[in-house]
Each structure stands twice: as structure tokens, then as C-alpha cells.
Length: 218
Image (spheres, rainbow, N blue to C red):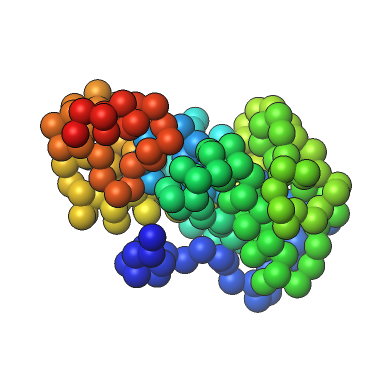
């Protein structure tokens, strides 16, 4: 499902004049595996030599600090995001959709940057290698807690979360009853109450059990 106002959100960074850290290590992380609504988004980042200090897991940062770091990452690093919509999540499952989002982010970054990374670091315990068609980087490692220990992954986590939160704020304008601008699609008490009252929207994940159970009541 395409929404023109969402598609205008920038999904890939500018590439002129950014000096990269060598070796080229690409960090990848996702945002939005757990929510009941909205897409899953992955960020991919190649750190520049002037990348900001204080990079950390996006979940540990205040909203104002995330925004500040995102702005600095945009200026000093090479970055891209990959987005997988709700329809695809429901068709192939959230794990496969997450691997696909990571593949899209990495592909976009390499294509626009015109280079291949020396290594790819992925947050978590699994990588897209052998799990996502189109993944072509064999030198990839999964790092549990990498979003808090590897600067490139930390930057990717910030990019992914910020991009996804913006998408959810746009969607909230059309479906204000669910409070997505506040809960980002997660199953908060207020979100669940709105679901019980209004039923699911086109942006809810039918493959997630809370939504499937609610649909039976409508």
C-alpha cells in the first residue's frame, strides 16, 4: 500500500564530500519488529570520520537526543533505510520481513555510495545471510547488543527508529484514534482500547495474534 505523503520522507542520505572511516564497516539495525501496526524499518550506516560522539542504542536515548544525533549522522555519515510494509509482513512473517528490510537498506546504501563494505555488523543474533533473497555480503556478523556497543549499529538504530516514528506520525493523521504518534504502533493500553472500540485499520498486522483475535469480534 503506497501513501504519497509517506514516500516523500527521505530514505537515503547525500554522498558528496563525506570522508569515511576505513575499513568500511556497515552497521545495520531495525525498528518496528514488535508493534501491532505499521511497517518494519531497517537502517544501514557507514560511519564518516566526523561521525558524532555519544552514539548509543536508540532506545536508551531521549527523543531530543535522538533527533540531535540523527541530524549529525545525516551530515557526517552515509546512510539509507529499507522499509517493508504491513502487507508483506503478513505474507512472509515479521522475521523474514525484518531480514528483507535489512537487505533493502544495505542494497540502497551500497548502490548510492558506489562501494561495498569490508564488513557488515547486524544487531541481534541472526543476519540476513541465507535468509533473505538478494543479500550478497558474506562478511557479515550478528552482534547481540550491538546497538549499544558498535557505533555503526548504534547510528543505524537511530536512523531506523527516527524514520519509522515519522512514518507512524504521518499514518496517525489519517487514523488519530490509535495514538500512533505517541505509541508508534506498539500494544499500549490506549492502543489496545482503541482497537477494541474501533477495530483494526489497514495498517494493523493481521498476522499478529492480538489483531487476529480482535478481527474475529468485528
